[in-house]
Image (cartoon, helix red, strand yellow):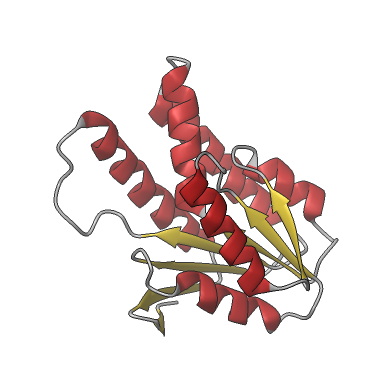
Length: 177
């Protein structure tokens, strides 16, 4: 079973930078599994800056929905795979299932169980980045509350399955597990 590292924290807390530094400790054959989608100009620019910061030693795999399948396809191809980020993946799934009128919670629960199973079968170490979205006020609408709940439950599940768990606050990583 691969070594699993889970890194969480607030927006712009330094999670991704810490995850990239942690990944370099595994070697130089680096896989970056990106879940973001270029849906507007601002996101396109954000993704461009992230790629520029990482440099050419990273091989980027873009997969907004089928995270487990992308991990399985990449297993054994790199010394480490960094997934950035779990909460973007969840929002992609939530909007997709909501758009198709599906039971979002049940479908995402199945996807998260598949992710946990995939992580347990991996050979390549995996670092997963996620956001803590439930530390603020209770959202004022059903979809935002559903997203907050799904993200919190998913973070708990991934953290439980991980060998290492870190939280990053103001650029300072703290190891929890």
